[in-house]
Every structure is written in C-alpha cells, then in structure tokens.
Length: 323
Length: 258
Image (tube, rainbow over all chains, first blue to last red; front, side, top):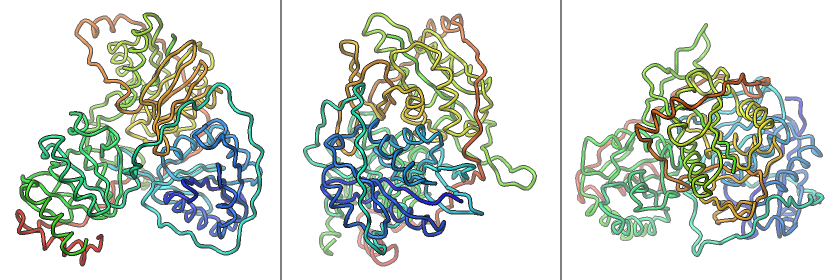
C-alpha cells in the first residue's frame, strides 16, 4: 500500500465518541501504524472541536461544527468527508457500520469512485494490499476481499474490534469549509426517542424471545431479565411479523446480524435465518422446551425447560448473586 | 409518478449456503448454486410493493423493475411484473451466484442505465441478502447526482416533492427531497404482495427490455469464500429451574461473560 494516510469518521453523541467509533479508531490506528502512514479523523457537529482536541494518537482532525450536522444531512456530510480524504490523500477511509456509517460509506465511495467493503470483521495488510473479511448471506459464509486499487472504503461491524482509545500525542484540529446546503434534501423533522435504547447490533448482551413467549404481553419477563443484565431485548422473525415486537427488534437474515458477548435465546426454535443472524455471538444460551430445537446446536449452554419458569428463576439467581 | 425499482436475484433466506469447490488449487470464491432456490431479495420486494402502492395511491404513474444479472434474472423480473410492475429492464451481466461483481461495478452499471431514463423516484432494498454490502442504492443515487435517503420506513409524496422517514443515529428523521429522489427500503415500509393467477398470466405478456450492462474494472477482488468458523460444541446444563444456578456459575466462571 503506497498511500500515505488513513482517514476515520468518528460518530459522536452527547459530547462523547460512540463505542463503534472508538472501535473504528482502533482499527484505523493499527492500519496507519502497519502501513507507515498518518492517522487523520473527521468529527462533525456541535462540540466537535473540543472533542477533537482531546483525541490522542491522531495527527489531524478535520472538524466542522456547523448546525447542519445536528441532524444527518447525507450530501453535505459526504462532501466534507470526501474533501478531507482528498486533503489528507487518504488511501483508506474507515467508519463503523452503524446506520450513519453504512449510508455515508456508499456516498463517499461514489464521490471517490471506489467501492465499500462493508461490515468488516477483520482488516489486514497482506502483501501490501488491504484485505477485508466480511460476513455474507447473513453470516452463513465469510468472504475475503482485497482492494485492487485505492482509496479503500471500509465499514466495520460494531462489537467485533476492541475499543482502544489510547495513542501518543495530541491532534491538530483543522477546520474544514462547510459545504453549501443541498436544497434538494433537507431534514425537516428529527424526533428523539423518549428513552434512547441501545441498538441491537451494538449491545453487549441480548435477551431474545420467540414464539415460545406465546404473546406480546409475556415479553415483560425478558424485559426484567434484560434490566438485570443491562441487556437489550431482541426477537425472532415470527414474533416481529406477528406484530408482537417492532421490526427493529428482529435478529436474523432479514433483521439484524448481531455479535454480542452473550445472547440468551428464550423460546426460539432456531430457524436457519435466525441462526445466521446470531451465531457469531461470543456466548449463546438457549432456553427451550423442545430438546431437539435447532437452537441447541449453536448454543454453548442450554436449559431444556419451560421459559415461563426458567427465565424468572434466572433473573432471581442473578439478582441474588448481585448480578 | 415514474418509479424505477432495482431488484436482485438472491438465494432464498432458507437456503443452506455451501462454498463451491475451489479451482486450480485456489480457495473457493463462490457458492454452490445447485439445489438452491433463488428469489427477489426481500428488501427489494418491499421496495417494489411500495412503488406499486405509491402508483395506486396517486392513481397514475408507471413502475419499472430493473435487474442486473445473467439470464436467470429474467425470472425475477417476471415475478416483479406479476407483483405489479408495468415494465421491466434486464441489464445483462455475468452474475450467476450474485457475488461476482463488486458494489462499484453494480452501481456504475445501474447508474449508466438510469442516466438515460426519466424517473421521479428510484427505489432499492436496504441491502441484498447475499452480498449485504448496503451500498448500491446510496452509491447509484450519488453517481447520478440524485439525493437519497437510506433505511426508509415511510414515503410521503407532497406537492411535487417527497418526504422520506428513516431511522438514523437512534432517531426518526424526516427528509424533504426534490424530485427525482432515491430511497432504500427497510422492513415495515410496505407489505410484499403475492400475485394472483391472473396477474401471473398478465405478467407473461408484458415486455422485458434487454440491455447489455456496461461493466467497469473491479475495485475488489474476491480472495476466498469460506464457511463461518465452527462453534465449539455446547452442552445442555440441565432441565428446568434446577439447572439455573449451574448456568449462572458457568456464565460467570467458565465463559466469563457476566
């Protein structure tokens, strides 16, 4: 790789870098070190300047604090990033594969006339070429791709890479000229949720429910267990299609592909699409009445039993032991 | 309203995926396609259903389905016509298993066609469930210079413009766009419809325009396609409530995940 620098886009919220952004920063820093190039970053929105000046181990941070970036304006955000990529002669642009990251990556890649290697679970330099491993078919297979030319654009799957904030030396904060507003696409409403919930793809622990829950009202059992564990509640496709839970809760090939530290499947038999979406979890627990349910084939630990008894008992045991 | 919808032929989500044997000592770079049922990618199906709904709600317009792929993609276009598309364009390119072209090649080929066409709205699925790169919609729109919004859950045409509702950064944002505009569909935008026998028969009479795709040099080279790493064998801790204390002990002391 003869390009000289790596550029990373950092998503911030409430004056702090988001965890997937810190993970992306770690990968970008390692890639910069291995290729002998500089690491530069882009940070946008209110408070970006002070956040940028506190970053360690980053050479330059391109900053724009315009109100425009208080909501997600794709056109302008992509323009700023493409400009930063040009100014820093970036050979690779990295960002987290969040909703923002996925959308932004496609637009920036178009502007830079290159391709995105999406949802990477490994990034390396092999014989000088940037090589990426990424799940395809919802994780039923792993594809290894190599960039034949640069710049590379890579989105990184949240929860896979270690969040590493460290590094030596402060960053130089560089202002970047705000692009003219794109009149053909304006954000006219931005509704903050009443209670912000962690996205399933970024959750450390997921407690997930299937048809075995028998009805939407019974998800309260999972909500209680999730509260004890600091987990997020997910669901199977059958449950979301039945309207018991919103589609955004769905884990599986037509829902979210997740890699939490712990995935607890309750009353989920384990359709192939569901298994594809969660089998990269680090530890899987299955609770199901049917000892032949396919979910037990991917589970590290299984309990055969009635979830209506086992889940409350598990919650009580965790509380008792100070869980 | 003239709406173009891009649809991809993909393995059914219930399909078991096996890497094809590698050739000449190289690792596998593709999947075994024999015995696999192919369908329209589920999110593309949602985009198509929304296009048909928008046309019906407006009482006028035309829905054109576009598919990039080899001869087998014609089947997908027939299905799109049966599901309510008025016309179809088969952009012919070698894509038998679905991963042979990279996202930049696909987006430039689609943009090459669409640049010559007159449309108000361009719809895509949020991702194809085979390659899962989730870049084609945004990238194609960007190459065309058309504003786009991803992961859309609601489309509201109003006064010659359109409002897209989407989920981004944990919020719901509404983006007001001039036409033409592009969007990628998320689950919940529309319910796919299953065609009647009459629609299937009518679809057989609708024309499919065939055009050779213009394919640029690839940016990505496929090195290998492998099965995911096997999980280590698990164990049944026990039955019912009695197994709970042991499960908690294992999670704490063996797996060390809580």
